[in-house]
Amino acid sequence: MQQLKKWLKGLVNSKVRRGKIKFPITDMDKNSSDMEDKIFDIVTDLLRDDISKTEAIDKLLVLSNVSYWVAFDRDKPETRHTKYGKYFVHRKDGKVHWETWNGSGWAYNGNVITHWMEVKPPCS
Image (tube, rainbow, N blue to C red; front, side, top):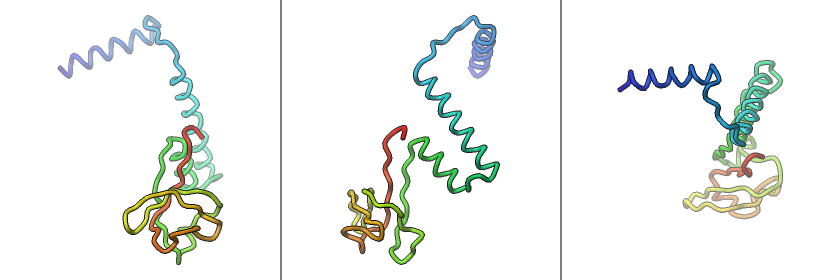
């Protein structure tokens, strides 16, 4: 079975290379090319030391629309967000909800928030 799959894959690839099989270009293919260009730009910036490793990871996660939780400890400034806005938060009791960060702290429930996440719309 594996040999058959390998043979079929080789056959299709050779016909595609010779132009005998044409695939229609879809919007997904165009978006894929856009994404490849953006990934290339991010990696290039990282290799040139224009951005840090953390910035590159953040940009790649945003590009692939991945949100991630950030641990929050009110006594550690590095775990705080820097800009005003609404964020998705996780509390000690397991509840999750939207909360406003006012620039220096959470508007409510500041003592019980353990994690926060910035949720971005697709393709932002």
